[in-house]
Amino acid sequence: MKPLLEVRELGKVYPLRQSFFRRTVFTALQPTSFQLMAGKTLAIMGANGSGKSTLAGLIAGAIQPSQGEILLNGQRLQPDNYRQRAQHIRMVFQDAEASLNPHLTIGSQLEEPLLFNTGLNQSQRRERVVHTLQQVGLLAEHMVFYPHMLSTGQKQRVSIARAIILNPQLLVADEALATLDSSVRAQIINLLLDLQQDLKMSYIFISQSPEIVRHLADDVLIMKDGRIIEQGAVDTVFDDPQERYTQSLLLSELT
Image (cartoon, rainbow, N blue to C red):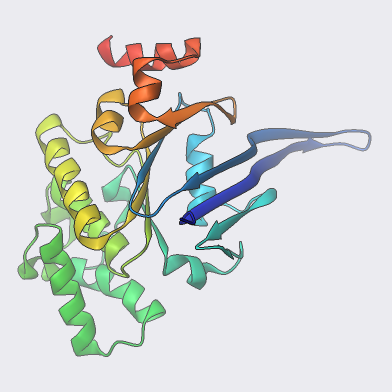
């Protein structure tokens, strides 16, 4: 079986300072390779500055790579072809409120991806918006709401709705549960699991929470200083971590 996603020697370097004699750079992500099978969830864990969010941004197309390539279903994704990527890979951010436009209704914000990426007419777009709202546990009436009229959990549901409205193959979630309280977090986790089963999506899930990763993911990458230091099935890595850094990440949930 071919993988859904192949990441090959993907890396990111930022120039910091350039003088007549010397050019200084910061390596946010060292050359990185891995695969993700269809219908599976890959978690990426690491402390702040480990490179996990850089990797997520590269996969989603929000950041341009310095080297390497990404293949989806065996087809190379062009770094500057946003339409190609938007139809197949979507992203959910940590701060749902910041990712929503406070001046537009929820319906308008969900309709926007359909306007740019589909040939649906107005009636068809409205039908898709209503259906997607219902998929994430919201009502058709929420179309006319503005973000400030929603709870934190509802805003994250809207962010998920916007991400799935184009029926993507891969959803990248960057700390999407980090700011939610425990009861709402449990609801969103169950929603994500239900959507994955119903829509046959794959997930890449960025998190610092071992509890969430164990509940959601099939496999995990542990990142430190811009590189993968340990990887494998979640149960294997969590039950017998080989790296001291991994052990400290797992213990941090208890402290």
